[in-house]
Image (cartoon, rainbow, N blue to C red; front, side, top):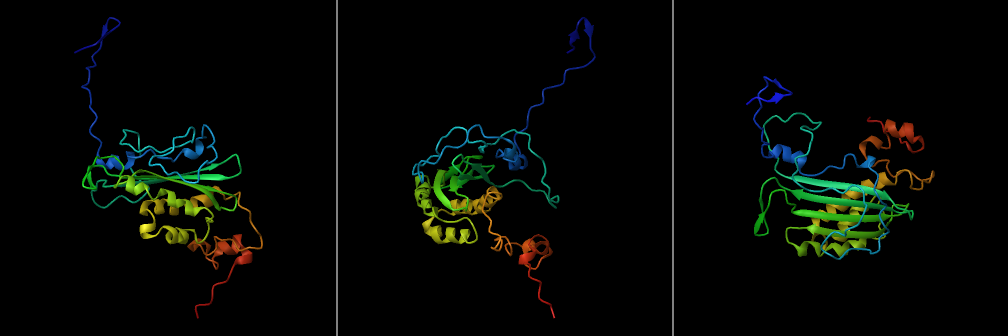
Length: 265
């Protein structure tokens, strides 16, 4: 077939329509979840309203307007990166499972902060689930947790919701118990408190993992807002290898708290 344009013939032959191939598992690994990599540059359309209830007892996520970036789990034909900044794998592989944890912090108009965490587990193919089969791309776990903290990183309110779990409403029945986090300070010992309050049958494994991840995110959100006592040793010292008390970093940035390493001999 030839196409005539304004009385002139063109020698360009129409190309056959290229149909999109089914989403491969490799692409699925990158495309399963809408990422929040740019959410820091996206202003929320409305500040979250003050929390009215300590904890949600319903089995579905509270619907609210204008919360900024909200991750959506779906198998999507989006433009996603084809590689990670890691060495190239030494053998062929395909995606088998994708866990996504996203955490967004909000500064509230009442002087508090909301941290909203979301955890999902999805598979690129159908998988067994509680005596049946879970459709590909559908989350087996879909959990939300909101921690409201003050300037001292003390939790003052909690909302926990399970939108999806392998055992239905039984999974979400534990959500109200996470109100026990009220009064806990997100500081050294925070993860120990989670294990003490919600270990084994006292909590939800995946909600615990989400709550644990939100601890360090709270520190980032309050980094320039938390009161600092110059007479108190910074909590970060000896908290990681870079800030070992004897390190050059502590000697440079926190000289008062630097402890020279003992001689090996």
